Length: 385
Image 1 (cartoon, rainbow, N blue to C red):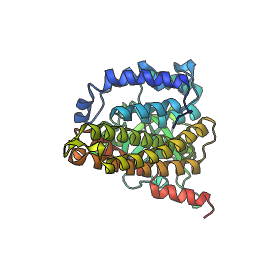
Image 2 (tube, one colour):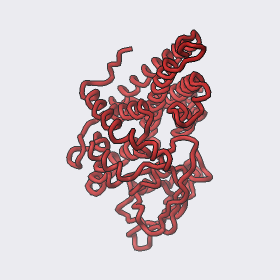
Image 3 (cartoon, rainbow, N blue to C red):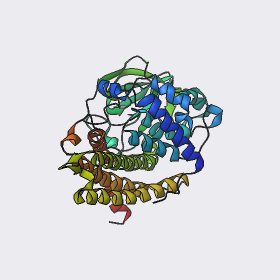
Image 4 (tube, helix red, strand yellow):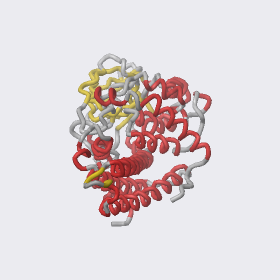
């Protein structure tokens, strides 16, 4: 189907990005994959390319574009090439909305120029070892000092994407106890400098997928966070977290669609090249039917993703819309990628082939950003059930 969601400017960005990936990422990706992390100086190249500043106002060094579609193109192109940019998607897609909405003018002047050029990489730390999706149950605390100059941060976080390479981390912590009426009360957000004393990066977690994305455990022992680094108002952090969930879930839906499209591309190329019983695997009816079924499911994903992108750019993507979009795309992509791996036969299980890595990378999409089960509850509630 012909897509109408992108303009000529979007497509020009796509071509620039595709050339960059071919020249700066593909030749090095095997090394990054083996090391389990993207080298930090690579982010300076992304900053120079302008990837981090697309939605940042010009006064802070960005392009001032008010569109999420550029981020969608980035996901499509990295998936197409079978590569990733490590934890940098969190830097832009998850952290930037908080900075743009809740930073003071003084904070924007301090943080955004480095955000744009890649010298000040951001991550966000919400999840704790014992809480999972229950963010209101977090135990990390931030207590205001007696002289009112800083908060003392104590606690730990886990599953923090970009946590190894981060220069600043948006940390969620309790500044007041929960109340009987509202257990979400008392959570605040802090933009924590990772060079502060008492801040420590623990294990870089060994995941089955997203191998180049540095996912870490973090700990805070009497970390003195200046009051100037409080993000937004004290005790209102939980509400802030909820407001960014539609974009986070849209991001995952777009990524799932992009991975499914890449899987079909990989499977079609493989089956046309691979011969069995004296003829290409692609010539068998089963192969044709499987790829056709995958393509039909991809078309449905594409239609939903494009509608979601338009709604988001118009400021009309609701929490229920995003939940439905993520649920459908992640579940559909999982099926498509599994079927495409099957068409590779035994080679589909070998990490040398991009379909194998894609299979592992895709699995987490049904977990983070809200599990499929949580999303079903949101959709059902919106239905009045």
